[in-house]
Image 1 (cartoon, rainbow, N blue to C red):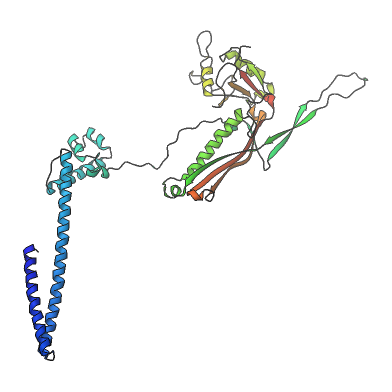
Image 2: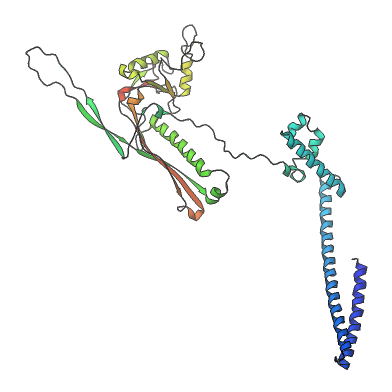
Length: 419
């Protein structure tokens, strides 16, 4: 309805209202007993009320239309200003719709090809101009239609630790410690003639070795909302992470632990003998051979070398006088499974590197020489109460394990030293 039509309607309404008021005054003057007058007045009142409602509705619609027109005009001005700032051209409404439809079509064309839009250009699926018109870099003109793929997987790096469990003796217990009797002195025998007096010979002596189960733990605080909203199984991830770090921590202790609240490492045990490498700073073939034969015969059948990968690399580079490698597993056609002096080896990153005065290689029967005691494998606990004031949940784990050198003579170490 135009403004002129609304104005005419208002004038008609004013005239009609004046006529009606005059009629009502006349009715009041002569009374309302006359049925004809009374009926006529009621009809006029009903028509008047209907016209009032119609005019009010039309006025409200006109006001809303004016408001919408103002907002649309402001939006158009804003877009025009934005285009001018970007150096673009103002296109008509039909042209803008057609352009958006083209971008959408090109996007789905690239999507159906199963390759990245940029790769689609190189493969001839899209031309350079078509790819440019998609403008995926601009979210408002197509970028929202090409979201990045979200992979529900956490990338983790490889963690290395000393796998001493695979070569040591394992035992479990339900107590806090295990006491193991051990012989500290052997019996002796002596020659005697047929009728000589036989006196008491040396008797065996005994000792008691104690293997204690020490405790280690890991604790992480995670918000309740993180546990509720994340698409990952945070608790399951922490369980795996804790188990891995327990392996790392115990592996270090089995090698270099100081026995103070933690397992004793075989490299820190002072009762284990050593052999020198016959060079002040390097590892030598002669030193390895001397170490091999320093071990008692009874322990050789189940003996193992333990060293880190850096030391293993230097051993593989040892050469003879003709510049031929002394050890070449996997290089020669007749190579046997990797071993050093026909005995297998285990790499342990916690072993020392080669250096003056250091002990980079251990050798011996670890199943007889070193014992690992398991009390509690791993216990996982979820505590929503201790940190509830901060909205956090504490997820912790504990493990009880011990380790100790039980027979020192079953193990030997190589020292980097000339003498």
